[in-house]
Amino acid sequence: MKFVILYLIAFTSTITFAQTIRIADNNANAPTGANIYTTLQAAIDAAVADDIVYITPSVTSYGNATVGKRITIKGVGFGITEIAPRGSSVGILTIVNSSNGTDNISGLILTGFSFSTITFAAGTGSSPYNNIVADNITGGSFNHTACLPSATDNLTIRNSLINAINLGFCTGTSNVKIYRNINNVSFDIRNSSNALFSNNLFISTAQFNTEGTSAGIRIENNIFSGSGDSFYRLVDALVINNIFYGKTPNGATSPFHSNTFSNNLVLNAFTFPPTASGGPVNSGVNNITGTGPLFTSAPVTPAYNSTYDYTLQAGSPCIGAATTGENIGPSGGLYPWTGNLTLKPSNVPVITEFGNSGVVPQNQPLKSNIKAKSN
Image (cartoon, rainbow, N blue to C red; front, side, top):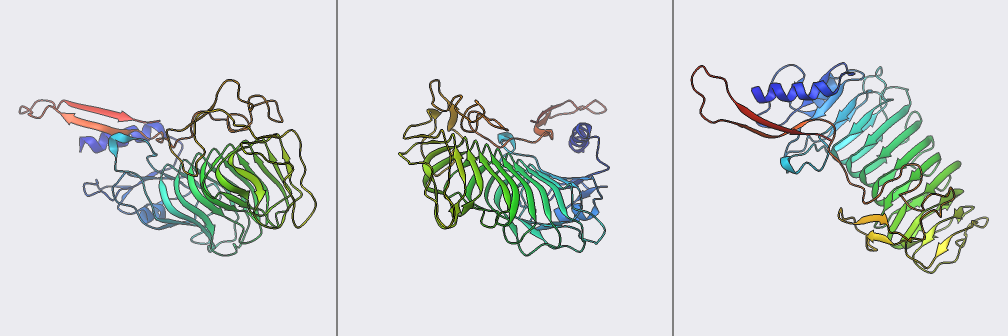
């Protein structure tokens, strides 16, 4: 019981702005008491606006859950080897604009856990899906299952490792920010407006589909590593300051037109602007082709490895060559990073070692050694 008390004190002392911290804990030795729940869904159901739902590290996934209120769902994060193989893991997390017709989803924060799928679905309310942030998470894809009853605005996905974003099913998605992520597969943001893809590492078969997008697509300071085409259908996009590392800035299918390609570096021999199809020509200036970016130790690969170092060496043609005079690639731009992008522990203190003296004399204090770690 001393372990539980100390743990909760450490956790609550770092977060003082929430109404209540709800703890989901499915471990066999989980404590009982107020605000502790054996399932993630029970913790979400009990939460009210601005509460924090904390997913206790476990070797067992917390399964599927639905959220339709403005709360924070927070896991332990990543990279804490002392507690492996425990982690904060969920299955399908379904986001609805309201689960009871009263609560409002706008302002939802998701951070520090792994997932299989995050799905936007219709709820019982009419409020918009605004100001949703996913930070430092890892897993499968973000999807729409059907046309939503209201718009999705100001969606941010950052500092995460994900497979795909498929939000082009219906109209109404706007002001999407995707930055500082490791991205594996594809991005479908058709019928969207004002989408920013900045300072990401795109690997494997990462391709974009912006067909029907109204305006404001910016793809800047990213790395496209692997082989083949970087884009699928791309229209009216600004593509600047990117490193195409094995992949080329071509469109795999029509329409691929009216895009601006400037100050990009392409490892392979390539002729700018890319050939357009289905509409007006592509344009652009100041691109560098047929030369490498001089990364410290990162091969051309369609796979991610945490040991790769994407820091630019001295003499790299990317240094100072961006449209702003900064670096081409993710070490420049709006959200710069160097080295390699890695998922991190959250700022929740996690006890990594707990021990005592073994034999305790009668009526004498218990001497314990406790070590904790946080980001």
